[in-house]
Amino acid sequence: MKRIAVAGFQHETNTFAVRKADFKAFEMAKDWPGLCRGDEVIQKTSGFNLPITGAVESLARQGMEIVPLCWAFAVPSGLVTRDAYETLAAMILDALATCGAVDGLYLDLHGAMVTEHFEDAEGELLRRVKMQIGTDIPVAASLDYHANITEQMVEFSDYLDVFRHYPHTDMAETGSRTAQILGKMVQEECRFLKQFCKSEYLIPLFQGCTTEEPCKGLIQGDLQDIRKRLPDCHYISFAAGFALADIEEAGPAIVAYGSDADEIRQAVEEFKHKLDLKEELFEQPGIAAHEAVETAVRISGAASKPVILADAQDNPGAGGTADTMGLLKTLISMQAPGAVCGVIADPLAADEAWRAGVGNVIAIDLGGRGFEGDSPLCGEFKVIALGSGNVVGTGPMWKGARMQLGPCALLEYQKVRIAISTKIVQTGDTALFRHLGVEPEQYSIVAIKSSVHFRAAFEPLAEQIILVLSPGPVIGDPAELDYLKLRKNVRIGPNIQA
Image (cartoon, rainbow, N blue to C red):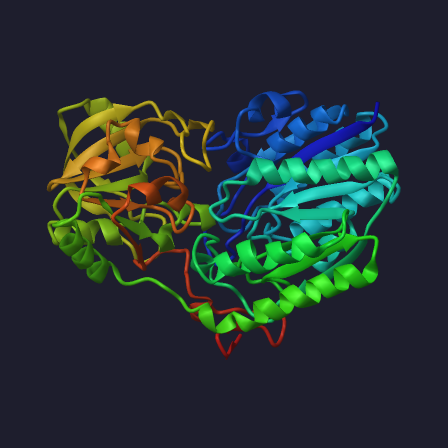
């Protein structure tokens, strides 16, 4: 029986964000499990829509002996600290060194991790892995759609595969697909030729959604057509990149594998041409908070379903703090009827709510601490409901996720209801509201901390979705960012050089 080691180390790094990810950030369970080691890797990730979960299930179906090493994830933020990276990388490498001989290694990586000392943290991890186990043992990794794939990542791996959907409803599916191809490499003792190409422009985070144009046509149309025409055992993947990383190799990338050099080269060149033709369509969407709320109030007056306001620039899934107050203050100042907002991360407010109990009033300064220039919402809030924070996801992306968010509460301030949590979480699942007794369908306006992932669960409930550009750490338009390390001749907007 072939032995396959499995491990994971995930972080999406917004280098423009201030809050760093230390070792504790990886230890803590949130919407995904906390740090797992050994057999815990399989036990604690079971049932989640995670790449490693799909990989483990695929390897078991293939009759492989699975050797779990270590798995860790931290909520997107600023740089990963040197200590956190070195500690977790050592855990993976030490476990790999002591687990006995293996025939292959699967890694669940993000692809956009930046640390205090490495721009290309995953490339460095893959390099260390290959230096330790040698070139004869195949290494395959699944990557996030927002990976900034680098030359080093391609060089020190044997196969890379990327999510095909944003929202990322196919995480486990991608892990399964990657493990299936790794199994083929192990069983047939084969390796692939590689072809790799980077784009000359950045894709704004908010415009990578694969259910909306232009990426819908690119990914579900053009790229899928190319896949269908490739011979068996030839593969192509596309990563839209993570524009909030100021590193040399940031941006979209195409990678292909197979036994025929001409086939994979032509596939990459064809898709690169399609990608180049779409550049002019990637213009920053969204409107300011005042205009967004005004529009939502007007629409909701005659609508049977809620208007969703996506507070995109405070998206915790891209380094947001989940506590900016701009959109919430606008809802209150404009007396938006039937509005609920969440999920605001404020452990102090959650603690005060639990101390007071349901039905009581607390005087607090809510949020406004994580983003420079922001300020708390100060006043008296009524405690409407309390929640343990132990939430089971029900939507397409978080389905089965056993979230541990700490004490939560539903507050009311001047008729606007506010869901708060102890830990930072992206509002990507309706279960986050429902566990506090909030049925989103019963509200006129639902304001959420997310930019795209929310669509998988909330879009079917919505009359209309409005992307809101209230100030926050997740700057949507790359042209507004001060890049210092990006390689030359990369455009940060249509016809705009960095």
